[in-house]
Image (cartoon, rainbow, N blue to C red; front, side, top):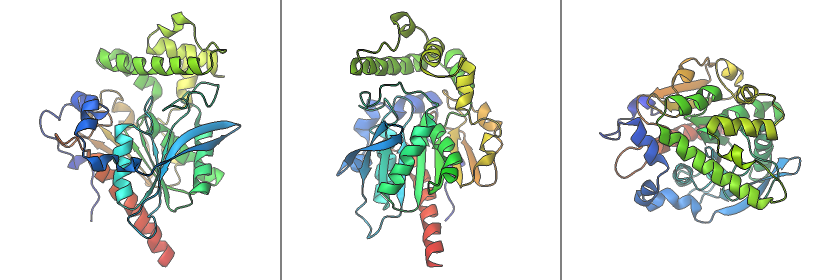
Length: 341
């Protein structure tokens, strides 16, 4: 069976609009319309805390499959910026993979979900070491093999960066799939300011400020930002965060710190897939078109899908469910063949 590709995604009108796809992707309307099966990963889920190294603790949720005598493997899911383990796209993907016989681990990044009180220092996008350390802890505690990661948006960026390092640190990661990942953070930040409709920046800023308020409430003795800084736009608040809470000297150094642009992915040692959409209004397609990738990295640019949408129709299910499941299952089948061969 040939695997689905982005070219196979043909949403009906008006879902061909990248803006509509993007707005529906995390909307409450979508969550209400989704079938119950899309949230099955919540049933029997175990809330856990994993070790991020250096005293860092990250939260997550583990759900064991019950459809096969032995799990196909362990699927680890990364949400996007200001998302969580309970984001609609995470639940939907996790539920589909669970039904196919995968054990599921959904990881919250620092200060996401309800984890603001666990670590005093703020989340920022260059905290890749704690995510890699958490993956090592997860691999030891739930040793189903193969282990594969799927990430969305910023989570896709984290997934790709983690995959570049896991073989070096001995984490048995077999495959990574990134949906609409941030490639060039500088370009993405500027596109939200300059070319994307105003409501995208307003949406992200509302969620970020609300998260920072939760952080301040968790650690009232620590002044994270001054009020004037919190009133700045995306670029201004990001720069304030960089100068206050990181070792980077400039905003550009910080953005470069989590970039996977140009030829950064040429060092990828495991199979990987990047799925994005040409009409994504949040992350410009130009950065994907400039990527240089090795033969083991599949770069798939669909015409439609928006930002992490890929919604098939008015039932609100996503093309990415089948897309991810097919590739994860193919990795599991290959692993089983090697073990029996």
